[in-house]
Every structure is written in structure tokens, then in C-alpha cells.
Length: 113
Image 1 (spheres, rainbow, N blue to C red):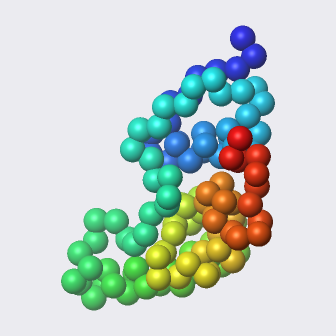
Image 2 (image 1 turned 180 degrees about the vertical axis):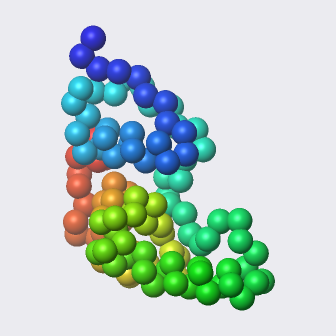
């Protein structure tokens, strides 16, 4: 009563984790995470990076992912973490950088409790 148990799979893990860390009311008693991208994803999945089209798409995703238009309209962009563009990630990401406390000086200490 007054809370629930949660099981997250894949992207659902991030939704539940965001709920727990930002709101948690009613509280999550137990959280089971299965195969979740907790630190984000990088690159264009299942695309052969030897192919020029895949390289072009991957490069474009990296450039566009942290723009406000993409962050505000494409949920997957909120957990895209390009290791070659960490500064852009920290500046433009609306979700993952926040819940992971990645921004120095802007940590939410409630997430650590």
C-alpha cells in the first residue's frame, strides 16, 4: 500500500530510474533492472560502421542529438551519450546527464540518497 515494485526492461529502466530519482511518490519499494542502457548508448545500432552510409548516419546523429529540437522531440536522444562529444552531451542533454549527475557543480545530491 502506498507504493509499488517496478521491473524495467531496456528503455523502461531509464523511465523507472528517472521516476525514482526525480519523484518517487508513490515510492518504488524494489526496482529490478534488466538490460538497461543506464549509462546511455553511443552510435547507430546494428549498422556496419565499415559502410559509408552508416558512418554518415552515425556522424549526423552525433551532431544533431544534443540540439534542443531533437532533445525535446525524440526520446532516444535523451540517453544518447557520444563519447566523442562529451562536452555537447553535458551541455545539451535533457535527461541522462541529469540523472547520472554528470555535470560538475550541478549534481543533485538527492539522487545519491
